[in-house]
View 1 (tube, rainbow, N blue to C red):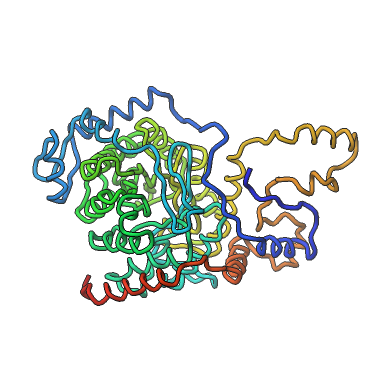
View 2: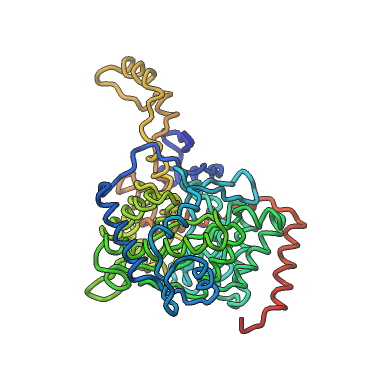
Length: 509
């Protein structure tokens, strides 16, 4: 078991002193999640087969639009029916292509100790993604900057249960769009030594990402081994646009992993049905993943669903509902059916601050992601406002929930049952276990920032809510952050590449 061991005895300074002691504890990096409890299923094999049949009928009879001539040329190599941009493909050929996708892959990090396996029972956690705003440490919602991105890279690097660095944790809007992708990649490589996420906003930006990874890993290695994972979204229902397809083709051609993740919103871009939503997005994702196998057979792919619904009283997208949880569980079952890795979403809230609603919203993503067989768990911490904002305070509170689930997924621990019996016999009726060495060295989980003291102590500490405690913790972590080692020559080469490409890329993009 790799979770942290903490002494359960008192500490000087009460809860405040305990929080400070824990905040200053050494940084620990957990290995990938290996679930040691049963996977939760929400339907039987008959249900899986019915969703499979639905998706096959969509692929055969309705099809998807591929808004890119080069992608259509790939499909022309097959027996697919092509009508303008509409592609329909028979199930036998579709499933033949899907069978080429590996059920797991190794995602290399610049620090080999941070290299991870994705799939076949191994799951990793990755940061929040793509928000243009932050809720900063003063509680102000504002546009994100490169300083915010760097700070969030540092926090994610220090998080025990986060295995992947950014990428685009937030969009640093003070960097012009044509050059922003390189600064985002550099931030992940500079401030963390965990695996990173690639850019998908144009073909050239995906190529720049590959070039930068070639600097880090060597060209030959970076072009044949998975050193970045990226995310593309379908325009649901049933449309793949040229930008997303360009990124897919670039990354697949270099054996880089791609999450094919339709942008589903049940009742708007997909049917107002959890099984119907899964059927539609499954067809969309399978067709994109299949096309990638035409580019390079065996290139790693991940099936992912954001699993949003729409509030029918307002039309607004909603993260965190029982139907979105059901979609996550069903999607995981379908990924197992096709033997491909599955991506799920963790801590996304529709709430605008780190309040009670944010906690409930996030839990509806946490529990299906953790209790299903999902292999890539994205949105590790901080997401607010339906993924438009990352909050510093919520980020830290979400990290604690990740640690708690990591602990829970280890399952029951029977290794010390004989010792426990002897202690119980020693204590006997009417005694207590607080002072026992076994208790002091136990592995019982404690939430770092949880208020579990008296009302009077909480009041004396300033009546802080969870978000405020999270902000304090974020500040303490940033104060004690230590940058992972990076070779000076490599660092210089990355900066020189960014400078050269900034001169070459037109200001208009």
